[in-house]
Length: 235
Image (cartoon, rainbow, N blue to C red):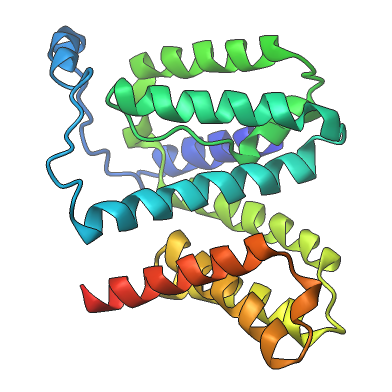
């Protein structure tokens, strides 16, 4: 709750000092009937194009590795990984059918765990609260960027603590991770940053004569990510 309190305090101070120029955010609940145009409105007309499959591959890899990373960090019981992946994959498929952006396991889920959430009831309550926030969307106009930006920066800084798990004594291990960390913000693309890192990792192992340290799947992913970069550059 510390982040929320900080945002609330900064928002109150900024509005009291007249530093916020609220842009009107309107939400017309009566237009929810138009949602039917998005429901089950799949479009596969571009299925035979390279850009279509690049988008599919990029999104799939982002969802897979973000889910893996989150579960490794937040779920100590590896026996529950299978059910967690099933839930994540099912909701990702349902989100596309329902006309929304793909659902993804987020690091913010740690907040529920810290507060004592241990069952699916936590997720249900969280989902209900997200639905409730639709009514409060107009209030977002009064929240200045100065209130939110520090929270995002601190959250990113806290993620850096996981770098201790990287073997910095091994160049072939830390350099691909370095590429991912640096190139995601520089390219403004999560998928591109991941592609450089996962393509570089098997290449580093081959060039250093340690190709047997990785399994076949790592090399397959490396080739796929390399092809992604080539096709993106050719677009």
